[in-house]
Image 1: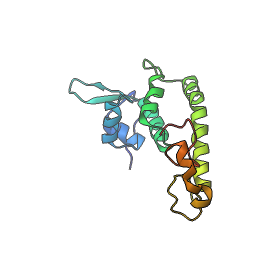
Image 2 (image 1 turned 135 degrees about the vertical axis):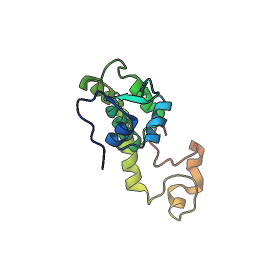
Image 3 (image 1 turned 30 degrees about the horizontal axis):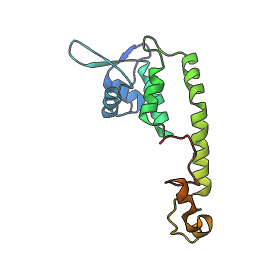
Length: 156
């Protein structure tokens, strides 16, 4: 059962943040080492996180789930204000900045869903259909990778 954190607590312990966010303490420490979230230390050297960190952790989790690399997540979080809790306007601006990237990712996932059992243009020529879709490895001249499934401009 998750630990209940009173709504009026402005700071959370690492255990409270883990319980409330559903993220393991070790993952929170990892996010902090990567600069994605921050904490202050008490006089007893215990971490204390501002309650707004819950939103940042939720953003990190959702972004990772759709395949956004941590470096891109960090860039986005660095664009948010560090001196105050991000507002709806701040989140909207970040969302709009990611709109094209997310649309590209959706297109990539749809392409994967719809054509995974077909030739993916990898150049392997191991499937009978590949000889028809990529005769003599013609796609090899355009470079490495699964040409039929890759969407240009989408970073791994």
